[in-house]
Length: 114
Length: 116
Image: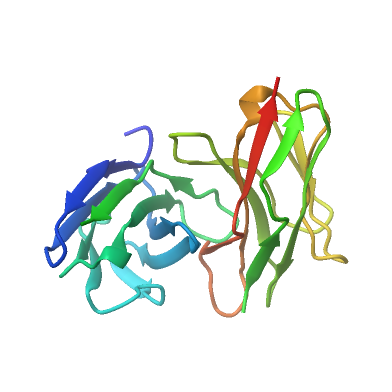
């Protein structure tokens, strides 16, 4: 597609439930990133994919968070046993890879845990 | 480690006023520098970038110059419009330390409101 596409755009879930957030990057972009945007924490890096591998998972806040990417394209971020502090906007981004290349962001998935 | 510090907001200006949003950074290598903008209800968009010292990024009347000596990348616009009201994020992407990819480190964001 023309831009980075994310779904769902909004998700309300009960505490303790698992959620999956999907990202479809710009065609041809080998690099894919997940960030989290929350009040008081700003924009936090979560994980980076180059192709299907994730050489940098340093930003995942706990083992309840995981992500995968298949076919060098679509990525899924999974949060298990959601907690209220997981409420945030989860942003996906993609680029051609390599520092200095523009990173393009999706509009985000707004997650609310009640 | 890498970090980005932006001037605290919110910033409130009248239309046609001059805008400066300060941004300074700390990096272990040779970063590329970016300004991203988030308009109300929209996603992050790249506003401008500079990839080496003394480069000037510019777009939509906004400018920022990569100053290595002062580790700064201040955003400026000579005459703001109501439509410029948004949140502005300064960010860096560091090539050093074995990282060959564009992991972004963001500042905390500055809310700009422009009144007619």
